[in-house]
Length: 190
Figure (cartoon, rainbow, N blue to C red):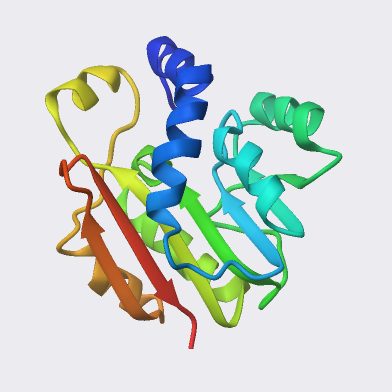
């Protein structure tokens, strides 16, 4: 996982888990129909996964870091399928999921090219009519300080709709949170 020690501590904290449950997920998933078979990309320490397992009938999570996969399997393996894989090369079948979600993880992907590959893979594994939704952080001084020595490649909200459309998505909507610190996105596979 491309995070420094301070970042790891924050993302594995109870405070972060509460923030995701009370703020990030309600905002990012507002008016999004997830359906019955959801894929989460990059769950990290499971703050979002902890909420999602209560909301959807079937949940699969793809995590790139093997040590984190073991933690997720220990904590959520009885309620979710945990897959050790790179989201830019998903070992999952075409059209398998009713929705794909990711939260505060795309900025950990080092290049726009790899992010675009994740968008293409997301499109591939979604069912027709399926939703792709999520959110990510926007740059600020505190955010940059948190990322000293680790990966930080934030999404440009102005370019994101075109990038998602290039992957095949329609009905793309992006917007910034009221404080400008987060961007959320929603798109659909036609």
